[in-house]
Each structure stands twice: as structure tokens, then as C-alpha cells.
Picture: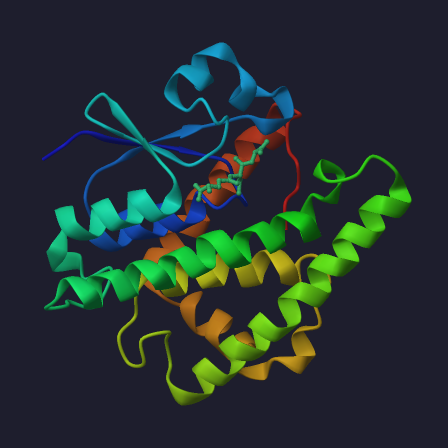
Length: 224
Ligand SMILES: N[C@@H](CCC(=O)N[C@@H](CS)C(=O)NCC(=O)O)C(=O)O
């Protein structure tokens, strides 16, 4: 069994591989990255991930970055956990990669504009505009998800997958920013349903502990 260490920050997208690891049930350690102390920009952290972001999964002593890569590797290394529904062909595998990439490359950057608009503009006016444009850009995708969850419980119908975990994190981040939840009842149901999944509950409990640790150190960012 490889030694697994996941670098995390509470409220961040590191929640997704945390859920994946909880779902697999393999032993793993977490390392808390203190954003407020700029730990992710330190030389030591950049040696692990030159992009200065979480998550990083260290497998034995080798780091793997990017959610899509981490989730894909976990899925192929631990097939019994069925993080993605089993597929027969390379094309079907590419379709699953497309689904993960949709969340990572299309939705996640919109979340960033909504939640951290100061990365994209230096005046309050520009930041408000970036945030507003992010909210507008998210609308058709939320509608797409609403329709998808009208047809099935999860992204792949009856089969829960790690795509759901990633979508859940996106939803949780935008709801915390005032996205109009009331327009998307299926998505709300979906979020409540996934929050009852034991792996998700364990991942959220880990985050609560990490948040407590940051609070005690005066380094909480209070991400909701
Ligand atoms: N494409 C990367 C995105 C990672 C990312 O944006 N991580 C955020 C947290 S959700 C981060 O580390 N932000 C800190 C920063 O940019 O300063 C992935 O999927 O792993």
C-alpha cells in the first residue's frame, strides 16, 4: 500500500480528494496548509507544488497535483472503490475525464471569480464586476446541473461518483457567496443528499478539526 499524504486547507477544493480517500477507506495523512500565513507560497511548499495551490497528494515521496489527475489516479489505483463507474473502452474513460475536466476547468474557475474576485481586479468596482460576471456565467451551468439531477440522483444516474463530490464543493462555494439556491431545488436536494454520505461526513469532520486548529492559531479564513 502506498504512503499517502494529502495537503489540504479547510473549505478549499482539497475537500474533493479528501472525500475520495475517505470513500476508498485507505489510511492517509493530511497536512494543513495555512493560507493566511502564506504557507502555500513558501519555498518549502513550492518545492512540492510550484503552482502554490492545494491539493497535493504525496504518494510515497512523489507529489501529484491537480484534482483531475489526483482523482483519476485514485480511481485507477483503487478500482474497488468505484470512484467512477467502471467502463469498458478508452472512449468511455475519456468521457469520464471530460466530466471531471468540466468541473475542474469550466466550473472551478467561475467559482474563483465569484469567491476571490480580488485576484482579477484591484479596485472594488472591478472586483464587484468580476464577481457579478461570475454569478451570471454560473447560471446556465447551474441550470444544466438542475436538469441532470432531475433525471437521476447523481451525475451518473444511480451511481455515485467523485464527479458528484466535485460538483458538491462547487455548489457549496457558490451558495456561501449568495448564489440564488431557491432557483435550483434539485441541486439543493443533491447537496443535502451528498452531505449524508458517510465519506462526505468524515471529510467535513476533518475540515472542522482543521478549521478549529486555524482558529486557535488566529489563522482562520472562515471559508463558508
Ligand atoms: N487546478 C487546480 C486548482 C487548485 C486551486 O485553485 N486551489 C485553490 C484552493 S480551491 C488554492 O490553492 N488557492 C490558493 C491560492 O491560489 O492562493 C486543481 O484542480 O487542483
